[in-house]
Length: 286
Image (cartoon, rainbow, N blue to C red):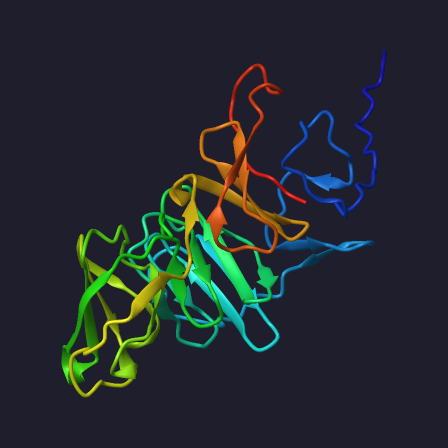
């Protein structure tokens, strides 16, 4: 008569997933040192450590944070956080709205330093490209052409609001930045982010009230602009060898600006002849 044999336990060791989270390879092809999921754990060269909690560094942002952008220059360091419609300055314990009126919060950004300063351009494939220059966010205009000014008047609270009227349509949108020069009184002059009220009128807020309306209107220049393709088509951005490159949304083309430039006409580089099965570019990296 056979005697039933009990089950035998087998001991085995599983290595710690020091390779980190692998969301690329199939399970069959995955390295045993990789993790299918890694939530609140961090890999080190020898083991895996548990996340030690968190500290709130900035509050006051409504909704989910969809992008974090770090601006760094020799004199200014800023952290920005974006929800669906607002870019917040999250550099302090209480975040403040820095750029409102956005359509999408999934910004892709990079840093570029030129002779003119340090800039952080960002794109999302829906809104025009935005640029932070260490002081203020600006939307990139679709034109570099400035129109003749017919009048600049003061008004608003404390007479700090300037209303500028052009002879023909200026082609700008709210959030563009212009530099006014040669106007009298001099308080009208300077670089300002504008609010467009109609096709020939925009306003901006001065730091000091002028004594009256402009007796000499001067001229203005558009500070940030991209021509050749509307920058709301840029879904991804990359810096390579001192030149900005952009992926066009739902396209097999990328575009680029001149070297060391935050402004200018973009040039197309089509890849349709290489990717013969179609599709579109998703991103680029250096």
